[in-house]
Image 1 (cartoon, rainbow, N blue to C red):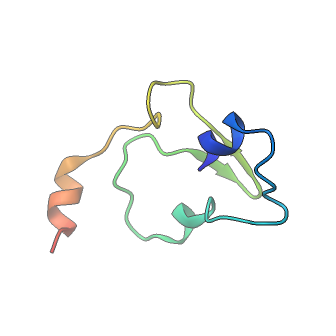
Image 2: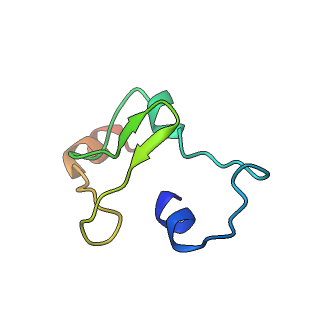
Length: 64
């Protein structure tokens, strides 16, 4: 969502807020390098794609 907001200048996030803060509510992280969230500020990565690496062993452990 952060990448989408940065890519489109007229997303109107003040009028239509999203769930960018969602990761701070989860008890398990499945990425090894999560986005840096500091209150209302989020630092996006300059790495390719979403900028994170999935820890597939944690995904396997928590899959149903």
